[in-house]
Image 1 (cartoon, one colour):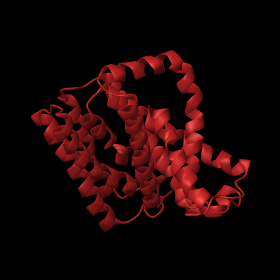
Image 2 (image 1 turned 90 degrees about the vertical axis):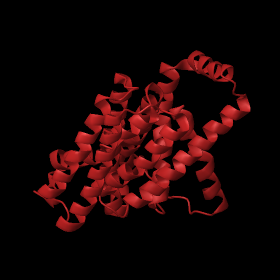
Image 3 (image 1 turned 60 degrees about the horizontal axis):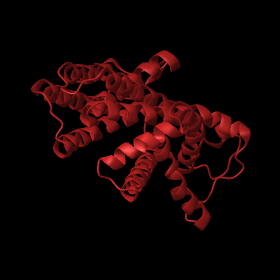
Image 4 (image 1 turned 120 degrees about the horizontal axis):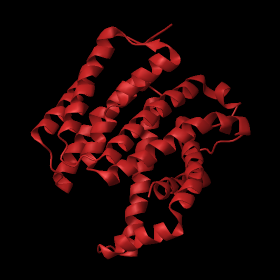
Length: 280
């Protein structure tokens, strides 16, 4: 499913480039593609791990885990790039950690596969954002003089690279027989082939458009700020999944979710008051 959803970004981008609605990137050298390959890998890993987590547990639980992304962003920046935030900003991340911990402790649909996959998705998403932001800030110099490589076109190339990275693994691990079996299982649940194709295509298209917009936002803000914005967004998804899919949520889980979102709000206030990260 993750591979198929990544694929459905292709028709959208191809339409924009072929009609001239968006200028297509030119002079994209192997060196530029090599620069983008690490971000593409983490983009694909984020999506694959997220899909696995969704399948192994409740959608609301996965988004609670993905709400830890600001914490991972701050940690990666500090350890990997020696960029440190003011102490009040770090303190605002504590409620996010505590909230996720509470929500996980009494999650009624908890599975280790969902927990591990959701956490991996949060870590790889934070890494992707940090690496992408550094390339975006450097502009053409980082991409060997590639032309028209706007944030939107850069995300398109990351999606294409990510698709081809996971395609061999998807075929090798799952194989045609596993894909056929999963397809047959979906049909046995009452779906028609047309409905399945529509669901996959709409899901892939919406996933692509959402991430393209998020990538445009990343070009304007810091990685941790971007991660916190994602966390606030997840409260809507969590509430919607509870209502639509009727996922059971314990009282402690609800308190943990609220605490995590409250921490994200506290971060936004602290960040605006105490300023940017310092490099050592």
